[in-house]
Length: 71
Image 1: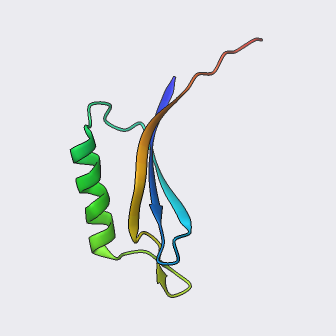
Image 2: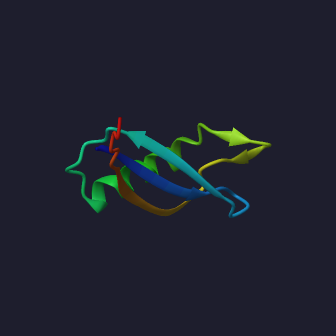
């Protein structure tokens, strides 16, 4: 199984945008993830068309994907 961490944000126009972390630490709690997301917003590193790409926190979740090989 491949576990990923999806970090959901909205930009300055309230449009959704996502960061996907492959093979994240699986022991992160909500406070640690929120702190990281707040740091991403505070750094203002990413812009698209003159707007901050990550302006507001929308949510986060782990997602497991199980692959079953048939042949």
